[in-house]
Structures are given as structure tokens and as C-alpha cells.
Length: 424
Image (cartoon, rainbow, N blue to C red; front, side, top):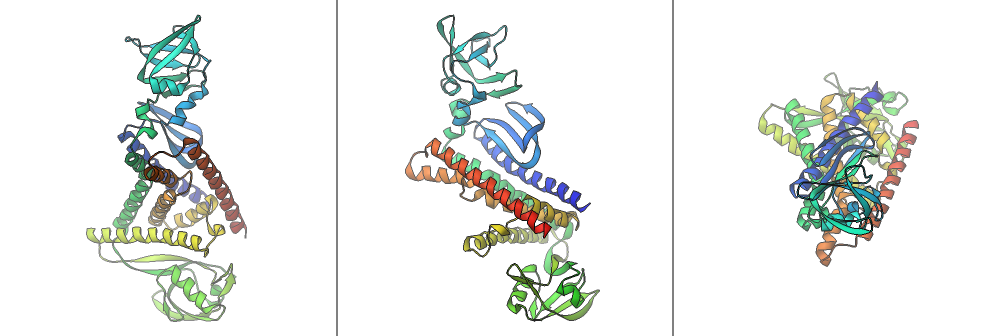
């Protein structure tokens, strides 16, 4: 049951985050006149599709990621892999302009041998054919379609002015950054909803959610549901305080003050070492202390929770950069599903909080100046602004491809680590 909750929660959280992210790219691209061929949620095989206007909306089988297929120079160079010398068919409108370019000519179409490539067709808005040894040139409508009847594919032609590369640097920057911005906005909306459900948070306590039966906390008599108050005189209000207090004590016995059923108790616990840290072998959850409900209080709580979530991600990145944490500490898909299942068992409100953190995480991660990420594209735009010309397209493509391969390798590595952690 917990695994099913984890999987369903993962699909809900990541589906919502990806939808917001890609919607940010999509809406801004449309706003600036960039042609969007496809808006996809998920990866892999298409399980549902619907075309509305010039855009194909798809739902794909693997609920991890998504994309917006925008009109680009590179995309036009390789439309359906049509090449010069191919036999094609043309459909004309009443003005004699080409409205459909068919990759498999049929009866009733003007057919012949293509004398140019698709990139030149969309750039010059002309198509040249050889018919019976004679070269013929036809004007192409800016809203013409490429049609592949055998594969069931179709796509709008992308004139030069509707390609991403043709847009000013400021507009390209907005398009690339909009995905992360939408994740940040969604994260705030989610914590705002949590505030509406719970009221203003005026404090927090740290509660034991589970206690390992073989661990030192269990031996000392601690139970799930106990609220930690102090460890060796240090006040405990969040999980980080516990780690700090235990780290300071090392393997020495610590005095734990806790509350159970409204009564204050004290026990001595001897932490045990694990992976460079000292632990009591428990799972913790931070429980909010809620004050009176008010709209202003809800917004104050939302602001505090959003900033807290953002700082948690920033601090994690700083720890990785400084070497305090390594790649082995990162959670992959399996780890996130496991965490989601644990959070989902606590209820819908904690799940919304977790979804908020995931959105902030996704937004910050995508803004990192790493190839294949939105931040990588923004970096190329910044370099273009500095040197006064675009970075060579082949260099951008190669760097992005290398970045994508490294990201896939990191994903596989984290999944492998997740499995090892769960097994152990």
C-alpha cells in the first residue's frame, strides 16, 4: 500500500511540477511568436495526443520530464529527415501558394524531385522541384504544413521569424527562465494552500515518526509520537538541531528531554555512528505549531515556508560544492518515490509541502549554468551578449549533448545508490 501511495504521489508531484515548468516555456514562447510544434508531458511513447491549432499536445508513457518542441534552425534542417533529391508532392491554395508539402506524393498533388532542403524552404518560403527535366519554383505559404502520411506525422513549417534563434536575447532569456519561474510560483501557491488548510505557523516541534526497534533510542525507551524538547541542553525545534547536538556529543551519552501525552520525561541515549554521523536511529518529522487563522498570517506562513524551502536547497548545493556532501548523498527517482510514500502516509497537507520543496528544487536545479539545462541555454545567451554574436551552433549542440549524457549518467548513479540504501 505504501509503495502504491509513493508511486501515485510521485506521479502527482512530478506531473504537476513538469506541467508548470513546461507551461512557463510554452506560454512565453507563444507570447513572443516562437512556433511550438509539440507540448509534451512525460517521455517515451505517446499514449494520448490532440492537435489544437499549430501545436500537438501529447501525454507520454514515462512520467518523468516533458518538453516543448519549439521551432529552431536545427529542427528545420532535419524535418522528418527529408533530403534534397527526394520525391515530394505539393498542395496549392487558390492563390497558387504551397500549403502542404507531402513526403509521399499522391494523386492530385504536384509531384517532382526536391531541389533544395527543408531549411531553405522555410527560410526563402519557396520550394523548387524538377518536373520532367524542368525546374519549377512555387511560393510557400508561411503557415504551410509538412505532411508524412505513412508515419502519420505532420508539422508546421517554421519561417525564419518564428524560430527561437531569431528572437532578441531578452526574449530568449525570458523563455528559458520562465520554466523555473513557474516552478517557484507553483511552490508558493502550494505553501499558500497549506497555510489556508492549517493556519499561521508560529513555531514548530520535532516529533519521532518512527523508532528503529534495534536502535539506541528504542533501547532508551523512546517511542513514535514523542516530541523532542532538548538534547544535552540544546533546544530542539527541527531535525537539523538533532544532528548538531548528536554530532557535538559524538559517541558519548546524551540527555534527551521529551514530551509524551503532555508529560515531560528524560532519558539517556548513547548515539551510534553511521556513515560519518552519530544517530539515535529514528525518523523525525517537524510538526507546526499553529496560531489563530488570519489571511495575513497565511501569507506570512507561506513566505516563511517558501524561503525555508529555497534555503534548504541552496544549503544543500553549498554542501556539495564545499565537499561536505557528495554525489552519493543525492536522491534519485527510487529515493524520491520512497520519500514520497513516507510523506503521503502522513496526509495530503504534508504531501503539498513536499511538492512545494520539489518545485523549488526543480526550479533552482534548472537554473544552474550546466549544459542541457535551462541555465546552460541562459549561459549561452549571456556569452552572446558579452562577445556580441551567438556561440557557434555546432559548439552549442555538442556541449548540450555532452551535458545531457552526463545528466543521464548522474541519474543512473543516483538510482543505483537509492537501491543500495533501500537494500541496506
